[in-house]
Length: 445
Image 1 (cartoon, helix red, strand yellow):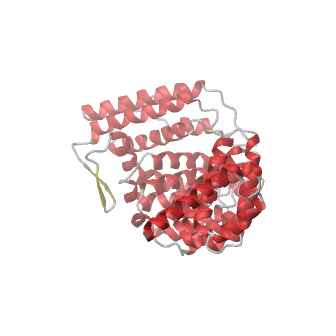
Image 2: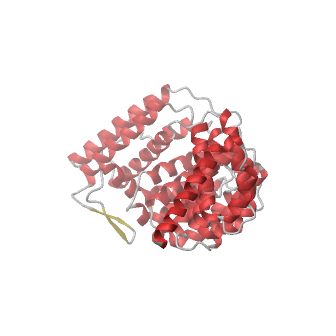
Image 3: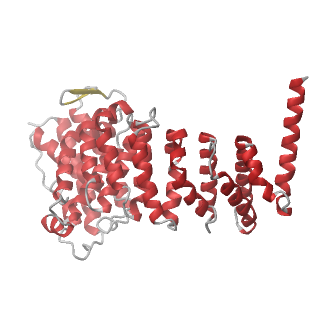
């Protein structure tokens, strides 16, 4: 005879399932051309049937909750998705799934909570005293759902003897995409300090997604790792750091649609795991892989803007060792300084300032060229929308060079001393020199 709380849980599960079923049934859906899998049918199959019995045993109830949660995960994760397999899911259905999962979590702990504040996951016990029911249920479900999702993603992966077409024929990639979105939803529902305790479950599954050939699957794995990097400390991830960073290197040459994910993921992971070791092989490998890719497509605006926007922490981590990469970095910077879009120009100037601050660029052969390019850019800025911002950054950069390079800067600047378009610089340097002379005289007295 089921308890009142268990009966209430089953009633909630049936009611919430019926609401989602109605929304899914009404939704317009046509499987993408060439796809043998119906995502709508997969989703509906995860919902308990209309006539679920009220005398189910506890294991059956927990299985029904697991499947319902997987359905909610896929629907909620599909919010704003542009993926062919999931873009038909409306924002209202995604929001309803999120809300339904929260409501079910509350009903679940009314029935099975028993005042327990510890969740036992194998030999691990997590204190969830102050954890909301939604997150608590996700944590409790992870040992059940993540191995299932890992296997589903792996089914359509390829090995060295496979081809993509053969893998797709064996198991449609739509199933892996479906599972990858569920993986991302479950992973991002847990944050610090609880996610670090679940690394042994989450990381192998996310790595399987990174190893997949589909950009959609990879992208969800990358988003999962971005969240992991922000919510797990370096000690908790240390057992996996080499295999994770190797996966980052292998994925640098990703397609345009997920380049922003791979750059952000790689920078976050290498800086969090190698933070005290600027000579780490992983800094070297990742930076070289990224530069290789950028050198092959220097005119690709989206790639360069993403890289310039996210690379700052890696530059700070490498520090003075950046000197070894000048021969590859500066030719790209010199080219991008004169790009048509203001975003690129501003980001390049900001990154040049960072490199100057970190290295003082020592006795570099690039000083003269850098001064020339900055002077040219200062003049070009007259035709740009963000001209005030650009000219301000140019001025700041030239002042940094003057302060760090002294006589080498003077030699590079001499050719521009008579340029009437640079009076602002001449006046500034005159004032700076006079100030320094005054300070020197004062100290001598």
